Image (cartoon, rainbow, N blue to C red; front, top):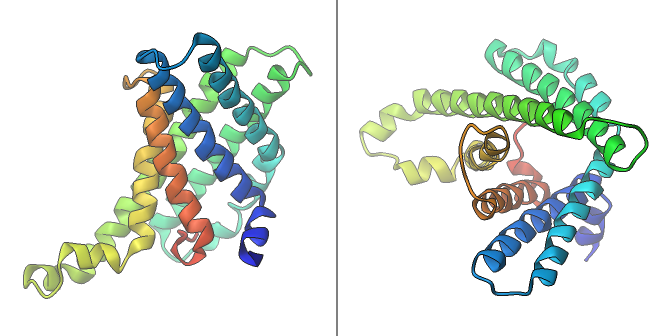
Length: 222
């Protein structure tokens, strides 16, 4: 119970729980609408829940663009130059995504007149860039692992399953990012998935992110 209370006090934990429910709502309303399992009024209520959760998460993220950009500074001294480049560029892309996201929030709540369609598209673009960079980092880490363990793998002293289980951090991050990348890619029109499929990707990536919050030892650092 103490651990649950401590987790609930973390803004990032609340954001990830809200994200999980948000994307689960998308899956539910898509399936119920497609197969006429609920009344139109009930489906609209679930869509409204998804919208409010998205707005709640934008409020939680307010101001985080500055924190994210500032957090890139210490990484300029990272000993691995490839990791340094990928992580710093990721932080910059994330910071720009959050800045655009803040502008969308200001427009949606009526604080100022904003072309929310334009800024949502720009936010999606930066979100996509950040995930592609994180995926590149994941693949780089996996190649590093392969170089260390390729002799054992070839001689069957270690199986691929053992490699994954002994390096959960990078493979969990890969799973999360591989699911996440289709969300902005769909929004930008690079791929075509229905709302239910996008929602399922969001649920999977949110569950992976929550797992790393509950078990910080599996969180990718930096």
